[in-house]
Length: 128
Image 1 (cartoon, rainbow, N blue to C red):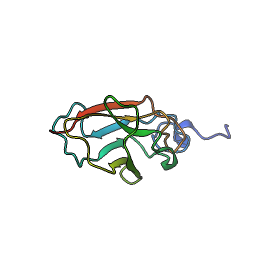
Image 2: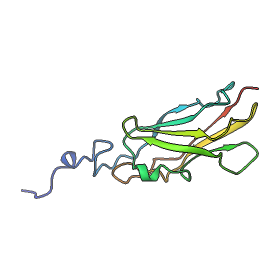
Image 3: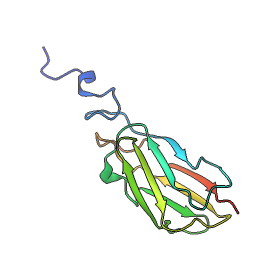
C-alpha cells in the first residue's frame, strides 16, 4: 500500500491545481492576431488556460511594443483571477496606423508554478 496519493489525487492531470504538471497557454487574445483597424483606445487582453500566479503577470512578462522600437508601451497591467485574464491598458492613445506586437513570455507561471508552455506573441494594426 502506497502512502502517496495517486497522481490524479495530487492534481497532476487537472490544470491549475497545485501539483499539476500541465503548462499553461494563452487561449484567447484581443485584439486578434493580424487585426487591422484597431481603435486607438484599445486594451490588449490575454486569457490563460488556467489560473495564474498574479505575481508573475508583470510588465516584464506581458508587454506591447510598437514596431520599429524596443521600448514597451506605457500601460497599466492588471490580472483578473476570476477570468484568468491579463489586461494591458495603455496610458495614452495608440498611434494611428502603427503596428504593435504584444507578447506574453514564459516568465508567467500558473498556480502550481509551471511556466507557460511557450511564449505567445501577436501583432495588430491601429486604424488610420
